[in-house]
Amino acid sequence: MPTGVLDQLGRGLLLTVEMTALAFAGALVLGVLLAVCRISPVPPLRLAGAAYVTAFRNIPLLVLLVLFVFGLPEVGLLYPLFATVALTMALYWAAFVCEVVRSGVRTVPRGQIEAARALGLTFTQCLRHVVIPQSLRSMVQPLGNVFIGLTLGTSLAAAVGVPELTGQAQLVTLKYDNPLTSFALTTVVYVAITLTSGVIAGRIERKVAIKR
Amino acid sequence: MNDDQLFDAPGPRARRRIRIATAASLLVLAGLLALALRQFAAHGQLAAAQWQMFTQWAIIRFLLDGVGQTLLVTAVAAGLALPLGALIALVRLSRSRWARALARGYVELFRAVPLLLLLYIFLFGLPRAGLTFPVFWQLVIPIVLGNAAALSEIFRAGVLALDRGQSEAAYSLGMTYWQAMTWVVIPQAVRRLVPTLVSQLVRLLKDSTLGYVVSYLELLHKAQVLGEYYHSVLPTYLVAAACFVLINTALSALATWLERRRCT
Image (cartoon, rainbow over all chains, first blue to last red; front, top):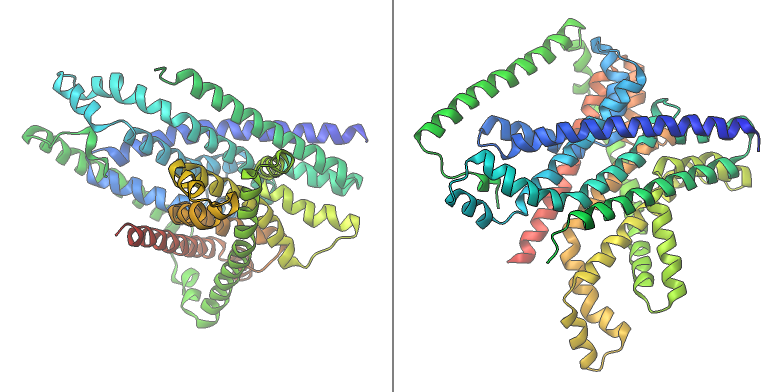
Protein backbone atom coordinates (compact mmCIF):
# COMPACT_ATOMS: atom_id res chain seq x y z
CA MET A 1 0.00 0.00 0.00
CA PRO A 2 1.52 3.35 -1.00
CA THR A 3 2.21 5.72 1.88
CA GLY A 4 0.18 8.35 0.05
CA VAL A 5 -2.97 6.39 0.91
CA LEU A 6 -2.46 6.62 4.66
CA ASP A 7 -1.42 10.24 4.33
CA GLN A 8 -4.52 11.21 2.39
CA LEU A 9 -6.88 9.21 4.60
CA GLY A 10 -5.25 10.79 7.64
CA ARG A 11 -5.91 14.27 6.28
CA GLY A 12 -9.50 13.24 5.59
CA LEU A 13 -9.90 11.94 9.13
CA LEU A 14 -8.55 15.22 10.51
CA LEU A 15 -11.13 17.14 8.49
CA THR A 16 -13.90 14.82 9.67
CA VAL A 17 -12.89 15.29 13.30
CA GLU A 18 -12.69 19.08 12.92
CA MET A 19 -16.05 19.24 11.24
CA THR A 20 -17.63 16.97 13.86
CA ALA A 21 -16.25 19.05 16.73
CA LEU A 22 -17.31 22.39 15.24
CA ALA A 23 -20.76 21.19 14.18
CA PHE A 24 -21.45 19.45 17.49
CA ALA A 25 -20.45 22.48 19.53
CA GLY A 26 -22.60 24.73 17.33
CA ALA A 27 -25.53 22.32 17.44
CA LEU A 28 -25.35 22.11 21.24
CA VAL A 29 -25.45 25.87 21.71
CA LEU A 30 -28.15 26.49 19.12
CA GLY A 31 -30.15 23.43 20.20
CA VAL A 32 -30.27 24.55 23.83
CA LEU A 33 -31.32 28.05 22.74
CA LEU A 34 -34.07 26.54 20.57
CA ALA A 35 -35.24 24.36 23.44
CA VAL A 36 -35.39 27.42 25.69
CA CYS A 37 -37.51 29.15 23.04
CA ARG A 38 -39.81 26.14 22.78
CA ILE A 39 -40.46 25.86 26.51
CA SER A 40 -40.64 29.62 27.15
CA PRO A 41 -44.04 31.19 27.83
CA VAL A 42 -43.65 33.58 24.87
CA PRO A 43 -45.94 32.42 22.01
CA PRO A 44 -43.96 33.76 19.00
CA LEU A 45 -40.75 32.19 20.29
CA ARG A 46 -42.48 28.85 20.82
CA LEU A 47 -43.94 28.98 17.34
CA ALA A 48 -40.63 29.96 15.75
CA GLY A 49 -38.84 27.16 17.62
CA ALA A 50 -41.43 24.61 16.56
CA ALA A 51 -41.28 25.79 12.93
CA TYR A 52 -37.50 25.57 12.93
CA VAL A 53 -37.50 22.05 14.31
CA THR A 54 -40.20 20.87 11.89
CA ALA A 55 -38.36 22.31 8.90
CA PHE A 56 -34.84 21.18 9.77
CA ARG A 57 -35.82 17.72 10.94
CA ASN A 58 -37.77 16.98 7.79
CA ILE A 59 -35.39 18.36 5.17
CA PRO A 60 -32.74 15.78 4.31
CA LEU A 61 -29.22 16.87 5.27
CA LEU A 62 -28.04 16.53 1.68
CA VAL A 63 -30.76 18.91 0.47
CA LEU A 64 -29.70 21.44 3.10
CA LEU A 65 -26.07 21.03 2.07
CA VAL A 66 -26.68 21.68 -1.63
CA LEU A 67 -29.05 24.50 -0.71
CA PHE A 68 -26.44 26.23 1.43
CA VAL A 69 -23.39 25.41 -0.67
CA PHE A 70 -24.83 26.10 -4.14
CA GLY A 71 -27.88 28.20 -3.30
CA LEU A 72 -26.64 30.83 -0.85
CA PRO A 73 -23.96 32.26 -3.18
CA GLU A 74 -26.89 33.28 -5.41
CA VAL A 75 -27.96 35.79 -2.75
CA GLY A 76 -24.41 36.97 -2.20
CA LEU A 77 -23.60 34.83 0.83
CA LEU A 78 -20.41 33.13 -0.25
CA TYR A 79 -18.24 31.73 2.52
CA PRO A 80 -15.44 29.15 2.53
CA LEU A 81 -16.77 25.71 1.71
CA PHE A 82 -15.69 24.12 4.98
CA ALA A 83 -17.34 26.89 7.05
CA THR A 84 -20.59 26.63 5.07
CA VAL A 85 -20.73 22.86 5.47
CA ALA A 86 -19.95 22.97 9.20
CA LEU A 87 -22.60 25.65 9.70
CA THR A 88 -25.18 23.63 7.78
CA MET A 89 -24.47 20.57 9.92
CA ALA A 90 -24.76 22.65 13.09
CA LEU A 91 -28.11 24.09 11.95
CA TYR A 92 -29.41 20.64 11.00
CA TRP A 93 -28.40 18.84 14.18
CA ALA A 94 -29.50 21.73 16.40
CA ALA A 95 -33.08 20.67 15.68
CA PHE A 96 -32.34 17.20 17.04
CA VAL A 97 -30.46 18.55 20.06
CA CYS A 98 -33.46 20.79 20.77
CA GLU A 99 -35.78 17.78 20.85
CA VAL A 100 -33.39 15.86 23.11
CA VAL A 101 -33.20 18.77 25.56
CA ARG A 102 -36.94 19.28 25.49
CA SER A 103 -37.77 15.66 26.19
CA GLY A 104 -35.03 15.65 28.83
CA VAL A 105 -36.76 18.49 30.66
CA ARG A 106 -40.01 16.58 30.36
CA THR A 107 -38.59 13.59 32.20
CA VAL A 108 -38.40 15.66 35.38
CA PRO A 109 -41.63 14.82 37.20
CA ARG A 110 -44.00 17.71 37.61
CA GLY A 111 -44.11 17.16 41.35
CA GLN A 112 -40.40 17.99 41.60
CA ILE A 113 -40.94 21.43 40.12
CA GLU A 114 -44.04 22.04 42.19
CA ALA A 115 -42.16 21.00 45.31
CA ALA A 116 -39.32 23.37 44.46
CA ARG A 117 -41.77 26.19 44.01
CA ALA A 118 -43.57 25.30 47.22
CA LEU A 119 -40.21 25.57 49.02
CA GLY A 120 -39.98 29.13 47.73
CA LEU A 121 -37.30 28.62 45.11
CA THR A 122 -37.35 31.21 42.38
CA PHE A 123 -37.57 30.17 38.73
CA THR A 124 -33.79 30.34 38.23
CA GLN A 125 -33.09 28.49 41.47
CA CYS A 126 -35.61 25.83 40.49
CA LEU A 127 -33.89 25.39 37.11
CA ARG A 128 -30.40 25.42 38.61
CA HIS A 129 -30.93 23.03 41.53
CA VAL A 130 -33.86 20.86 40.48
CA VAL A 131 -34.58 20.71 36.77
CA ILE A 132 -31.18 20.89 35.10
CA PRO A 133 -29.31 18.34 37.28
CA GLN A 134 -32.10 15.80 36.84
CA SER A 135 -32.75 16.33 33.15
CA LEU A 136 -29.06 16.34 32.16
CA ARG A 137 -28.83 12.71 33.25
CA SER A 138 -31.50 11.55 30.86
CA MET A 139 -29.97 13.53 28.00
CA VAL A 140 -26.58 11.80 27.99
CA GLN A 141 -27.52 8.75 25.92
CA PRO A 142 -29.66 10.60 23.32
CA LEU A 143 -26.96 13.26 22.94
CA GLY A 144 -24.47 10.45 22.39
CA ASN A 145 -26.71 9.17 19.60
CA VAL A 146 -26.87 12.65 18.09
CA PHE A 147 -23.08 12.80 18.22
CA ILE A 148 -22.75 9.47 16.43
CA GLY A 149 -25.33 10.51 13.84
CA LEU A 150 -23.48 13.77 13.32
CA THR A 151 -20.13 12.01 12.90
CA LEU A 152 -21.57 9.66 10.29
CA GLY A 153 -23.47 12.55 8.74
CA THR A 154 -20.29 14.53 8.11
CA SER A 155 -19.58 12.01 5.36
CA LEU A 156 -22.27 13.74 3.27
CA ALA A 157 -19.89 16.69 3.00
CA ALA A 158 -18.01 14.56 0.49
CA ALA A 159 -21.02 14.84 -1.84
CA VAL A 160 -20.59 18.63 -2.02
CA GLY A 161 -16.82 18.47 -2.42
CA VAL A 162 -15.22 18.52 1.03
CA PRO A 163 -12.42 15.93 1.01
CA GLU A 164 -13.13 14.49 4.44
CA LEU A 165 -12.67 10.82 5.30
CA THR A 166 -15.31 9.38 2.96
CA GLY A 167 -14.34 11.78 0.19
CA GLN A 168 -10.68 10.86 0.56
CA ALA A 169 -11.55 7.16 0.50
CA GLN A 170 -13.17 7.69 -2.87
CA LEU A 171 -10.34 9.88 -4.18
CA VAL A 172 -7.74 7.37 -3.03
CA THR A 173 -9.70 4.60 -4.73
CA LEU A 174 -9.68 6.48 -8.00
CA LYS A 175 -6.03 7.46 -7.69
CA TYR A 176 -4.36 4.25 -6.59
CA ASP A 177 -6.96 1.79 -7.82
CA ASN A 178 -7.15 -0.13 -4.56
CA PRO A 179 -10.79 -0.01 -3.50
CA LEU A 180 -10.51 -2.84 -1.01
CA THR A 181 -7.82 -1.38 1.26
CA SER A 182 -9.03 2.21 1.28
CA PHE A 183 -12.71 1.37 1.84
CA ALA A 184 -11.86 -1.26 4.44
CA LEU A 185 -9.58 1.14 6.31
CA THR A 186 -12.19 3.88 6.25
CA THR A 187 -14.87 1.49 7.48
CA VAL A 188 -12.64 0.41 10.36
CA VAL A 189 -12.06 4.05 11.33
CA TYR A 190 -15.79 4.83 11.32
CA VAL A 191 -16.59 1.71 13.34
CA ALA A 192 -13.89 2.65 15.83
CA ILE A 193 -15.25 6.20 16.18
CA THR A 194 -18.83 4.99 16.63
CA LEU A 195 -17.95 2.27 19.13
CA THR A 196 -15.76 4.54 21.27
CA SER A 197 -18.41 7.28 21.26
CA GLY A 198 -20.99 4.73 22.35
CA VAL A 199 -18.73 3.42 25.13
CA ILE A 200 -17.91 6.94 26.33
CA ALA A 201 -21.58 7.92 26.38
CA GLY A 202 -22.35 4.78 28.39
CA ARG A 203 -19.55 5.58 30.84
CA ILE A 204 -20.77 9.13 31.37
CA GLU A 205 -24.32 7.92 31.81
CA ARG A 206 -23.30 5.42 34.46
CA LYS A 207 -21.15 8.01 36.18
CA VAL A 208 -23.92 10.59 36.53
CA ALA A 209 -26.67 8.06 37.25
CA ILE A 210 -28.43 8.38 40.58
CA LYS A 211 -27.36 5.44 42.72
CA ARG A 212 -30.14 3.97 44.78
CA MET B 1 -48.40 16.67 27.77
CA ASN B 2 -47.18 20.14 26.85
CA ASP B 3 -44.23 22.27 27.83
CA ASP B 4 -46.04 24.43 30.37
CA GLN B 5 -44.87 22.50 33.40
CA LEU B 6 -42.05 24.87 34.29
CA PHE B 7 -44.44 27.71 35.01
CA ASP B 8 -47.33 28.53 37.26
CA ALA B 9 -50.31 30.20 35.71
CA PRO B 10 -48.85 33.70 35.20
CA GLY B 11 -50.01 36.50 37.44
CA PRO B 12 -50.58 40.10 36.31
CA ARG B 13 -46.91 41.06 36.43
CA ALA B 14 -45.75 37.94 34.63
CA ARG B 15 -48.47 38.46 32.01
CA ARG B 16 -47.19 41.96 31.39
CA ARG B 17 -43.66 40.64 31.04
CA ILE B 18 -44.81 37.95 28.63
CA ARG B 19 -46.57 40.62 26.56
CA ILE B 20 -43.39 42.69 26.38
CA ALA B 21 -41.32 39.62 25.46
CA THR B 22 -43.89 38.71 22.81
CA ALA B 23 -43.67 42.13 21.22
CA ALA B 24 -39.86 42.14 21.38
CA SER B 25 -39.52 38.67 19.88
CA LEU B 26 -42.03 39.51 17.15
CA LEU B 27 -39.93 42.54 16.27
CA VAL B 28 -36.72 40.48 16.17
CA LEU B 29 -38.32 37.76 14.04
CA ALA B 30 -39.79 40.32 11.67
CA GLY B 31 -36.39 42.00 11.44
CA LEU B 32 -34.72 38.68 10.56
CA LEU B 33 -37.34 38.02 7.89
CA ALA B 34 -36.93 41.51 6.47
CA LEU B 35 -33.16 41.05 6.37
CA ALA B 36 -33.52 37.77 4.49
CA LEU B 37 -36.02 39.28 2.04
CA ARG B 38 -33.73 42.26 1.45
CA GLN B 39 -30.82 39.95 0.75
CA PHE B 40 -32.98 37.99 -1.69
CA ALA B 41 -34.31 41.12 -3.38
CA ALA B 42 -30.85 42.70 -3.66
CA HIS B 43 -29.71 39.77 -5.79
CA GLY B 44 -32.84 39.56 -7.88
CA GLN B 45 -34.02 36.28 -6.35
CA LEU B 46 -37.47 37.69 -5.66
CA ALA B 47 -38.01 38.63 -9.32
CA ALA B 48 -41.06 36.96 -10.78
CA ALA B 49 -38.92 35.46 -13.54
CA GLN B 50 -37.08 33.33 -10.98
CA TRP B 51 -40.28 31.81 -9.66
CA GLN B 52 -42.60 31.89 -12.66
CA MET B 53 -41.37 28.55 -13.93
CA PHE B 54 -43.04 26.79 -11.03
CA THR B 55 -46.43 27.70 -12.50
CA GLN B 56 -45.71 25.80 -15.71
CA TRP B 57 -47.29 22.38 -15.80
CA ALA B 58 -44.31 20.75 -17.55
CA ILE B 59 -41.99 21.76 -14.73
CA ILE B 60 -44.45 20.83 -12.02
CA ARG B 61 -44.79 17.43 -13.67
CA PHE B 62 -41.00 17.09 -13.86
CA LEU B 63 -40.75 17.70 -10.11
CA LEU B 64 -43.77 15.53 -9.30
CA ASP B 65 -42.10 12.75 -11.24
CA GLY B 66 -39.10 13.25 -8.94
CA VAL B 67 -41.38 12.98 -5.91
CA GLY B 68 -42.73 9.75 -7.39
CA GLN B 69 -39.20 8.37 -7.83
CA THR B 70 -38.30 9.35 -4.26
CA LEU B 71 -41.41 7.56 -3.00
CA LEU B 72 -40.62 4.55 -5.20
CA VAL B 73 -37.08 4.27 -3.80
CA THR B 74 -38.48 4.68 -0.29
CA ALA B 75 -41.19 2.07 -0.80
CA VAL B 76 -38.88 -0.53 -2.35
CA ALA B 77 -36.13 0.07 0.20
CA ALA B 78 -38.59 -0.03 3.11
CA GLY B 79 -40.25 -3.14 1.68
CA LEU B 80 -36.89 -4.90 1.71
CA ALA B 81 -35.43 -3.39 4.88
CA LEU B 82 -38.42 -4.12 7.14
CA PRO B 83 -38.40 -7.93 6.71
CA LEU B 84 -34.59 -8.00 6.75
CA GLY B 85 -34.52 -5.93 9.95
CA ALA B 86 -37.14 -8.16 11.56
CA LEU B 87 -35.15 -11.23 10.58
CA ILE B 88 -31.94 -9.82 12.05
CA ALA B 89 -33.78 -8.88 15.25
CA LEU B 90 -35.13 -12.43 15.54
CA VAL B 91 -31.65 -13.86 15.04
CA ARG B 92 -30.30 -11.50 17.70
CA LEU B 93 -32.95 -12.74 20.10
CA SER B 94 -32.44 -16.39 19.22
CA ARG B 95 -30.81 -18.88 21.54
CA SER B 96 -27.81 -19.82 19.42
CA ARG B 97 -24.82 -17.86 20.58
CA TRP B 98 -23.08 -17.90 17.18
CA ALA B 99 -26.14 -16.65 15.33
CA ARG B 100 -26.53 -13.89 17.93
CA ALA B 101 -22.91 -12.81 17.56
CA LEU B 102 -23.22 -12.77 13.77
CA ALA B 103 -26.33 -10.60 13.85
CA ARG B 104 -24.77 -8.31 16.42
CA GLY B 105 -21.71 -7.91 14.20
CA TYR B 106 -23.91 -7.02 11.25
CA VAL B 107 -25.79 -4.39 13.24
CA GLU B 108 -22.68 -2.84 14.77
CA LEU B 109 -20.97 -2.71 11.39
CA PHE B 110 -23.79 -1.25 9.34
CA ARG B 111 -24.85 1.24 11.99
CA ALA B 112 -21.31 2.55 12.08
CA VAL B 113 -20.71 2.90 8.35
CA PRO B 114 -21.93 6.15 6.81
CA LEU B 115 -24.42 5.54 4.04
CA LEU B 116 -22.37 7.55 1.56
CA LEU B 117 -19.33 5.33 2.14
CA LEU B 118 -21.50 2.28 1.54
CA LEU B 119 -22.77 3.92 -1.62
CA TYR B 120 -19.24 4.64 -2.81
CA ILE B 121 -18.36 0.99 -2.21
CA PHE B 122 -21.23 -0.02 -4.46
CA LEU B 123 -20.37 2.72 -6.95
CA PHE B 124 -16.56 2.44 -7.13
CA GLY B 125 -15.52 -0.63 -5.14
CA LEU B 126 -17.71 -3.48 -6.30
CA PRO B 127 -17.51 -2.72 -10.04
CA ARG B 128 -13.75 -3.36 -9.72
CA ALA B 129 -14.67 -6.84 -8.54
CA GLY B 130 -16.91 -7.24 -11.57
CA LEU B 131 -20.15 -6.56 -9.72
CA THR B 132 -22.08 -3.71 -11.30
CA PHE B 133 -25.68 -3.09 -10.33
CA PRO B 134 -28.17 -0.91 -12.21
CA VAL B 135 -28.34 2.64 -10.85
CA PHE B 136 -31.62 2.04 -9.02
CA TRP B 137 -30.14 -0.86 -7.06
CA GLN B 138 -26.87 0.96 -6.46
CA LEU B 139 -29.00 3.40 -4.52
CA VAL B 140 -31.48 0.99 -2.94
CA ILE B 141 -29.15 -1.79 -1.73
CA PRO B 142 -26.98 0.46 0.51
CA ILE B 143 -30.11 2.10 1.91
CA VAL B 144 -31.60 -1.33 2.67
CA LEU B 145 -28.38 -2.59 4.29
CA GLY B 146 -28.03 0.47 6.51
CA ASN B 147 -31.67 0.79 7.48
CA ALA B 148 -32.10 -2.93 8.16
CA ALA B 149 -29.52 -2.57 10.94
CA ALA B 150 -31.37 0.41 12.46
CA LEU B 151 -34.75 -1.31 12.08
CA SER B 152 -33.52 -4.50 13.71
CA GLU B 153 -32.49 -2.48 16.76
CA ILE B 154 -35.97 -0.94 16.87
CA PHE B 155 -37.64 -4.36 16.64
CA ARG B 156 -35.34 -5.82 19.27
CA ALA B 157 -35.99 -2.97 21.67
CA GLY B 158 -39.73 -3.39 21.12
CA VAL B 159 -39.63 -7.11 21.86
CA LEU B 160 -37.45 -6.61 24.93
CA ALA B 161 -39.68 -3.80 26.21
CA LEU B 162 -42.72 -6.04 26.23
CA ASP B 163 -43.78 -7.16 29.67
CA ARG B 164 -42.10 -10.48 30.49
CA GLY B 165 -45.35 -11.77 31.89
CA GLN B 166 -46.68 -11.99 28.36
CA SER B 167 -44.10 -14.53 27.18
CA GLU B 168 -44.14 -16.30 30.54
CA ALA B 169 -47.90 -16.70 30.26
CA ALA B 170 -47.47 -18.05 26.74
CA TYR B 171 -44.89 -20.62 27.94
CA SER B 172 -47.12 -21.66 30.80
CA LEU B 173 -49.86 -22.33 28.29
CA GLY B 174 -47.47 -24.85 26.73
CA MET B 175 -46.39 -22.75 23.73
CA THR B 176 -42.90 -23.28 22.36
CA TYR B 177 -40.44 -20.37 22.00
CA TRP B 178 -41.37 -19.70 18.39
CA GLN B 179 -45.10 -20.08 19.01
CA ALA B 180 -44.89 -17.53 21.81
CA MET B 181 -42.91 -15.20 19.56
CA THR B 182 -45.29 -15.48 16.61
CA TRP B 183 -48.60 -15.35 18.44
CA VAL B 184 -47.94 -13.31 21.55
CA VAL B 185 -44.79 -11.22 21.52
CA ILE B 186 -44.37 -9.99 17.96
CA PRO B 187 -47.96 -8.81 17.31
CA GLN B 188 -47.92 -6.71 20.48
CA ALA B 189 -44.41 -5.38 19.96
CA VAL B 190 -45.07 -4.30 16.38
CA ARG B 191 -48.21 -2.43 17.31
CA ARG B 192 -46.31 -0.45 19.91
CA LEU B 193 -43.51 0.26 17.51
CA VAL B 194 -45.56 1.98 14.82
CA PRO B 195 -44.49 5.56 15.71
CA THR B 196 -40.78 4.63 15.94
CA LEU B 197 -40.99 2.68 12.69
CA VAL B 198 -42.51 5.65 10.91
CA SER B 199 -39.77 7.98 12.12
CA GLN B 200 -37.24 5.48 10.81
CA LEU B 201 -39.19 5.54 7.53
CA VAL B 202 -38.77 9.32 7.43
CA ARG B 203 -35.04 8.81 7.89
CA LEU B 204 -35.05 6.28 5.08
CA LEU B 205 -36.84 8.73 2.81
CA LYS B 206 -34.20 11.31 3.61
CA ASP B 207 -31.53 8.75 2.70
CA SER B 208 -33.07 8.43 -0.75
CA THR B 209 -31.69 11.90 -1.60
CA LEU B 210 -28.35 10.16 -2.07
CA GLY B 211 -29.69 9.51 -5.56
CA TYR B 212 -28.01 12.88 -6.12
CA VAL B 213 -24.67 11.10 -5.78
CA VAL B 214 -25.39 8.10 -8.01
CA SER B 215 -27.29 10.25 -10.55
CA TYR B 216 -30.59 8.57 -9.96
CA LEU B 217 -33.34 11.02 -10.89
CA GLU B 218 -35.17 11.37 -7.58
CA LEU B 219 -36.46 14.70 -6.30
CA LEU B 220 -33.12 16.24 -5.27
CA HIS B 221 -31.28 15.24 -8.43
CA LYS B 222 -34.18 16.49 -10.55
CA ALA B 223 -34.09 19.78 -8.67
CA GLN B 224 -30.38 20.04 -9.42
CA VAL B 225 -30.92 19.38 -13.13
CA LEU B 226 -33.79 21.85 -13.28
CA GLY B 227 -32.02 24.56 -11.30
CA GLU B 228 -28.87 24.39 -13.37
CA TYR B 229 -30.79 24.37 -16.64
CA TYR B 230 -32.88 27.43 -15.78
CA HIS B 231 -30.17 29.20 -13.75
CA SER B 232 -32.42 29.35 -10.72
CA VAL B 233 -30.59 27.08 -8.31
CA LEU B 234 -31.82 28.67 -5.09
CA PRO B 235 -35.58 28.73 -5.86
CA THR B 236 -35.51 25.16 -7.13
CA TYR B 237 -33.71 23.80 -4.08
CA LEU B 238 -36.08 25.76 -1.83
CA VAL B 239 -39.05 24.20 -3.60
CA ALA B 240 -37.47 20.75 -3.26
CA ALA B 241 -36.87 21.34 0.45
CA ALA B 242 -40.50 22.40 0.87
CA CYS B 243 -41.60 19.20 -0.89
CA PHE B 244 -39.54 17.11 1.53
CA VAL B 245 -41.02 18.93 4.52
CA LEU B 246 -44.53 18.31 3.17
CA ILE B 247 -43.97 14.60 2.49
CA ASN B 248 -42.28 13.96 5.82
CA THR B 249 -44.81 15.87 7.91
CA ALA B 250 -47.55 13.92 6.12
CA LEU B 251 -45.77 10.69 7.10
CA SER B 252 -45.44 11.83 10.71
CA ALA B 253 -49.09 12.88 10.79
CA LEU B 254 -49.98 9.40 9.58
CA ALA B 255 -47.98 7.96 12.46
CA THR B 256 -49.78 10.16 14.99
CA TRP B 257 -53.12 9.14 13.52
CA LEU B 258 -52.23 5.44 13.66
CA GLU B 259 -51.09 5.83 17.24
CA ARG B 260 -54.26 7.62 18.30
CA ARG B 261 -56.38 5.00 16.60
CA ARG B 262 -54.55 2.30 18.54
CA CYS B 263 -55.12 4.04 21.85
CA THR B 264 -58.88 4.30 21.57
